[in-house]
Length: 374
Picture 1 (cartoon, rainbow, N blue to C red):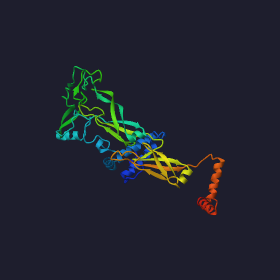
Picture 2 (picture 1 turned 30 degrees about the horizontal axis):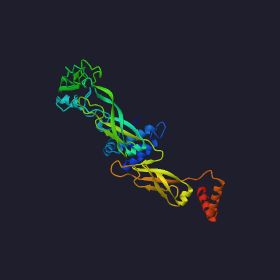
Picture 3 (picture 1 turned 45 degrees about the vertical axis):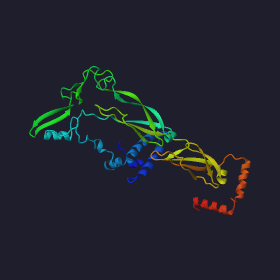
Picture 4 (picture 1 turned 180 degrees about the vertical axis):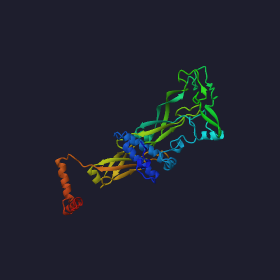
């Protein structure tokens, strides 16, 4: 199945700003997060949005995507093996060898290679993302065999140089044609390109020189980290090949939703109920924040939907100093289950307020007409 356009996935135009892309991703992340949305396709949509955001939020990756689409020219490019050649059929390197007798610079198949990167998804609580945490992770990965020290040979023995390729890992097939001398290089069929032969294999790794083990890694989650963030732990990926450096470990953060707070960047949002009396007469109420309870003064005549801001009561800024703000939205709750005495008081209140005057009825009629079109 072909991938959808990343801009289409996030619902933004190609001229969208970085902020627009960030807002669109956060909206989709909240909507399709597996901890919140239990629909069958929610997780796939969440992953699709995350992949699109990872590319479009990076200026270099976005520029490459805008030019080449889903095909990354740095990863072999356009359905082929790139210009580097290799394999049984070769590439442009073999063509130059055929007509000019070789001598071009080619990649050494026995050169050290960096190990693969690993990815680990870590789910944390809302407040753990706000304040940070330290924890130990159990990461399965490939490590050097301790018995043969990575050689793959039985202890007391060692690999031998391949007699066919003499350690180069490549075979040369030479042909004399009407066009001249043709040299074709291929992976050595005797040693499969390793340049070495192991006659007696290590009993623990069976000649591979590496084993699967679980490694305990201590990590620090910084305060202010948000959902979808990636933390890189250098050198904790898969082991390198032929003495190459190990890869890195990337920890993808997933943050659980909170029952009371919602997060938007470094700001926190919450909704607080008010009684009719509190909203009409004013009051001073206690508001829970991320760290403590604070007093909030409600002015008389406050309307439902009004926002109040508590400065510095949001999330610590991941990059920079200080914290965001907490925004409190008040909602006036209509009372239910009133006693007869309470009902009588409300009727008296309505009467004193003149709610049944001609002016009030006229307003009601205008409201009615707006809906019915009279």
